[in-house]
Length: 162
Image 1 (cartoon, helix red, strand yellow):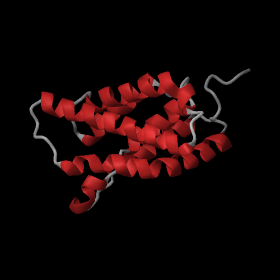
Image 2 (image 1 turned 30 degrees about the vertical axis):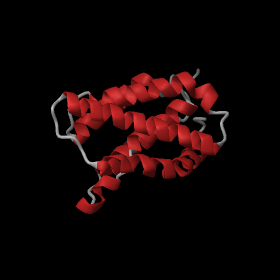
Image 3 (image 1 turned 180 degrees about the vertical axis):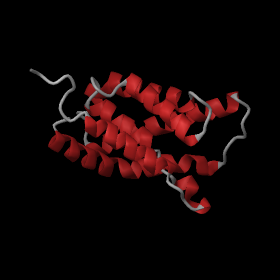
């Protein structure tokens, strides 16, 4: 008998759960603007490396869960993360052959696009526009991507997910 779920699928859920915990972890007010986009980074990684298991629908579900957990407008993160995952799934064969520094720049552009979509939703719903510190998490994602990619890649190979 074969397994109904591919081997190591639990790692995708566990990494998303960890990203949720890191997203809602209390931080001092001074450092709140420095919180990286953990869920977006994890969604990009799994959409890039296992697009058949973690694609647009997984990102939509993760976005809805993030909306509920963070108390934002329902569908805000679902929209941005599903569009982010769509771009990654469509381009994953091209992105994976890039060297790490080019992948990092591509992920940074994706994080900027996610922030722009969120900014558009904020403007469309009449919420106040954030300041320049709104863009800082994208730079932290730029710095964290190689490390997060290496960590999740190693864990994925050990668990049989990749």
